[in-house]
Image 1 (tube, rainbow, N blue to C red):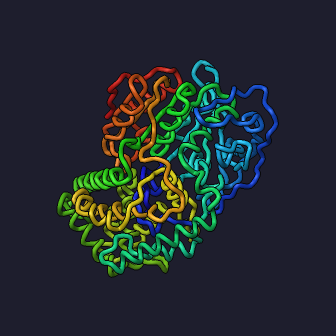
Image 2: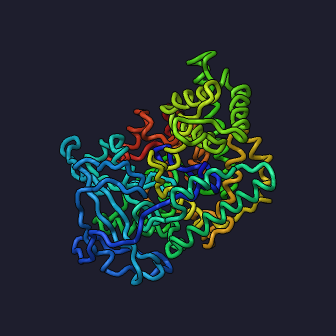
Image 3: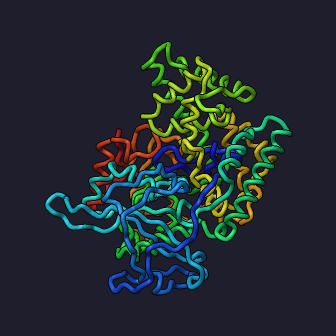
Length: 540
């Protein structure tokens, strides 16, 4: 599986839980020049500064973007070889590699947009750019936004829909670690060790991954933190010509939005947080919350399966019986992986990854039922392996995107905690009680930063935002990756009069794209008509 300290993106197949072995994947992004130029723009808003950060030069704040038709997303971005439609334009934005040295080396950030259609009711005018981050950390916005654009079509009437590859991700100086073959080999290492030999092997795989990241991307590793990404957002705002930032953050994107609001509270325009990362939890607490969240989602899946399929449901009546059937399957895979339609085999780690992938969206529950039935009754692992590959960013040719390498690099740059095998051993009883299925994997994923060459920047993200405009914070009661309680914690941390919580009583990761009309209306009214939802709004 794939370690994520915070949460996955809205596609529901980005890395969230993980063992260190599969968290280190190839990437081909680089800090090469793109079509952006550094000519001055008379219409760009004035630059913003934060305490202790040198101001940016006009060559950056005044640059003009050379928008061009988009090519197909790269392998690092997770592309499938097809270009987005003609409404999509791409460009690169130059940003400082190190914001402490704004006149120094720059990197190129990959951007994508669809210009506002202007078809709003009554011919209402364009509001500005609405910038998306779909989470991870490590998800490519350039690849993701076109794939999900239908969910945001109403907003495109008055906003340019914009997304980007954050620094370290995809084609924005993408972090490169192991190549494809080495990643497959690393994934074969047991990510939930049962004895000292397996623990030693996991530690060795972890160290090899870290060494590869340092060798291939050492110059960018200190600068892929979320604080720097938030400064990129403000530079983006200025270059796009907006006086205020309009932003839609999902999963880890909510943390990025909170960090932005803390640094630039006066620059917040409309800001939506969906599938909220709890800013008060350290990595161990966050991982434990995810173990509980995925177990809850699994139990909800099993209830639905029993109700719909009866005796043919592979997890029976669910509850303890269903959990036992799944753990029996996983225990068997630990020593005897299953064959698949390819020449690869379904291991215990890959099975847990596939199960987790399907729990992000109830629309994937049928695939999970099929995959479990194949494995339990047919002795094959084809469907669960396909789910795991999608979750891992592995395409049918065996090439990996850089999402997991970026995930690790960003998480380790942000989080000061460094967990050892002894730490995990002490945590295992609590994690196993929280989830017999996911507990071991989420606990061992905490070791992914143990030998990282860059010190983490903080114990917790700073998201207090006194003076900010109202921020809409969405929590889904059935969210597996970012448990519902995180939304309330974010509201409290943002401060009085800033965060406005909206609750969805539903299933899956996130809320806006769930199809719930009540929630969509509340968010659309906020973004399009500047109507802040009533505190305590609940949709079901």
